Amino acid sequence: MDPLEIIQRHYDLDSKAYYFLVHHGRLVARKALEIAKKARHLNPDLKFIEEAAMLHDIGILFTNASKIGCHGRKEYICHGYMGRELLEREGLPRHALVCERHVGMGITLRDIKDNRLPLPERDMVPESIEEKIICYADKFFSKSEHELLREKDMESVRVLVKGCGEDKLRTFDDWSRLFL
Image (cartoon, rainbow, N blue to C red):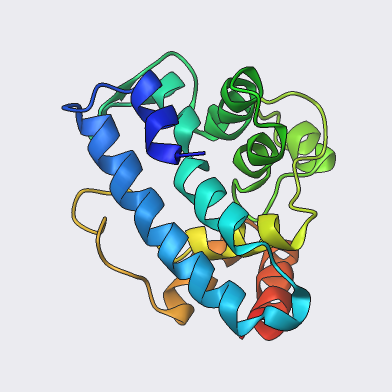
């Protein structure tokens, strides 16, 4: 399976959205593979990690994020579950779960209800080791124009994650100890 072929079925190759999606995906894939290789004791599936990391943000095309060339109708937080739906239609259910579960440090049903998020009411939390590695690696990269190609340092990531809640920071710190 070639992730770029799947992306190219849904994105215009000359679009800003394609540029951001592919560059971000490559950086996250590289970081996720580095993490996975350090965590060989957890027996991660490297091929799957590389593919799923490239595809994890495929749902951004359905969102209203004009700064990265996306002109859909959904709020950005919806890109995970929208990516899941797209990849399920592509016949990639395992990859689809990575899309849905990578947002934030995972989004619980309680998070959705308490914050009235425009998401399906279900837990969207990484479960497999591969999902956790990709979610973790994703936090080190932004899709903003000025930071797209720059990896964030650990403390910057911790500050961003803490903004989502102390529970999310605890999860991030637990994964940091597990992976590094």
